[in-house]
Length: 81
Image (tube, rainbow, N blue to C red; front, top):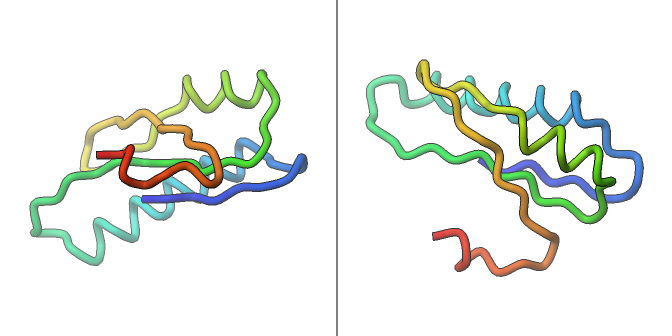
C-alpha cells in the first residue's frame, strides 16, 4: 500500500486516513487471500514533527497493526524488499 505526498501542505491525519482506507479496500478485494501487507508513505518534504507523528502511527489490516514506512520521492523501490 503506497500513499504519495508532496509539498509543504501535507496533513498527517489525512495521509493516515487514506492509508487506512486503502488497507480496508485491499481486504475487501481479497478477503480470503493470504497476503503480505506493508504501508508506505512516499514523501517529498515533511517537517520533523510530521515525521515523528507518522513513525508513531499504525495502519490496521486484518486485526494487526502495521507501522508506516517512510520513503523519499525518487528512492528506488528495490530498496523496499
